[in-house]
Length: 278
Figure 1 (cartoon, rainbow, N blue to C red):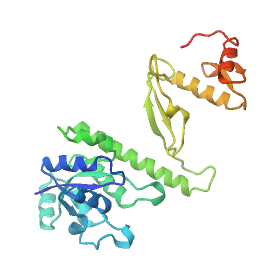
Figure 2 (cartoon, helix red, strand yellow):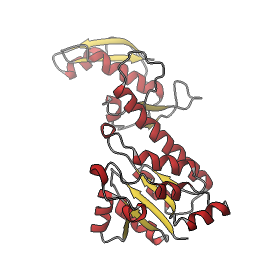
Figure 3 (cartoon, rainbow, N blue to C red):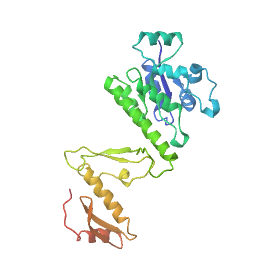
Figure 4 (cartoon, rainbow, N blue to C red):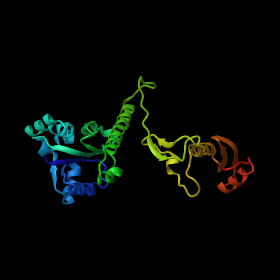
């Protein structure tokens, strides 16, 4: 059977280069809508998804593109099961071995994309699923079982994050029976609160954390305690209209100073407490 890769992405970063690499690996490309248009403009041979599904192109203003028996079957059938393989041939089902998909913004409530991602992640032993452009390079070489599982796990977390944001948008209760808190990782930390603990820094999607914009100029990478100190310091000086500086030790302000400008506040702060940077 021919090998197909299905590419349907909202974030089109590096998708052209990925398509070229997949073709080199022997895949034929199936694509949808804007992704199809971009690849075609790049002179990449693409099979429009409607030629596989038989559906009218972009039905209901594009709400129905990928949802079909042919596509989901092509992702889900078990390549190791002779009965499945024979049935796929009889029904003219394409063997889709790679699914590359990321989703519309939450407010658009993507339906077809999550369906494909979930199907591919479920069948990870046969299908590679990629939801993050940063992972495109990982499928250029040898595909290990562990990589398949890691990409499937990332896909399920991607869907969980997406659905939790939709649920929170529709929720009108202060304390719903079930609550999922969506978080995205900003960076790994040197350690957690103590050196024997691992740690990472997270924030809620579509929010702006000052910690996400930190620039590390010198010294060791930040630990969990360091980031906590920085956050406490930022929140402390925000309480004042005047330029302010504060000393933080283990998440507690232990010296605060105000000044006519930041330099003066910083100089005054140094007399508030003796401490060691840690």
